Image (cartoon, rainbow, N blue to C red; front, side):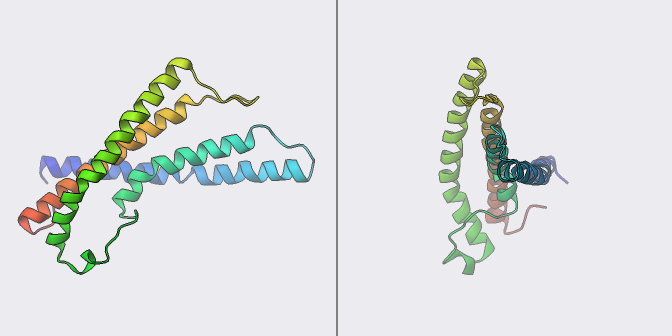
Amino acid sequence: MSHVAKILRAVEQLNDWSGKLLALITPVVIAITVYEVVMRYAFNAPTNWAHELSTLLFGVQYILCGAYAHYHHQHVNVDVLSHRWPPRWRAWVDVVTSSFFFLFVGALAYTSWTFAIDSWNLREVSVTDWAPPFYPVKIAIFIAFILLGLQGMVKLIRDLHLGITGRELS
C-alpha cells in the first residue's frame, strides 16, 4: 500500500471511529431526557440543566458526525442523471463540483475558528443559571469542519485517481 493510500485510510479510519464513538452520546442524551421528563411530570421538579445539556450534546454529536456521514456517502446527493453514468464520469463531475464543497467547508472552518478563539478567550458560558461553558462546543464545531475537510480531500484524491486511471484507489 502506498504512503498516500495509508494516509487516506488513516483519515477514513479516524472519521469512522469518531462517528462510532459519538454514537455513544445518544443513550446519554436519552437518559438525561428521561430523567428530566420524570422529574418534571412525576415530581413537579424540573431541572434547569437537562434540556440545555441534551441540546449541547446532540449539537456536538450532529456537527462532528458530518465527516462520518461523508465517509459513508450518507449526505444528500442529487444524482438524477449521474447515477446512470459510468464511475469514471461521476468521479470527474465530483472533482469539478468539489470546489463548492471546499468553499463551504473552508468558510465554515474559518468562521468557526474565530468563534472558538473568541469563546475560549472570553471563557464564554451560557446565560442560564446553570451556565455551562460554550467554548468546548465551539471548538468541537471547528474540529468538525477540519475532519469534514480532510474527508473531502480523501474523496477528491480518490475521485481524481478514478478519473485519471479508471480504477479505484485501494
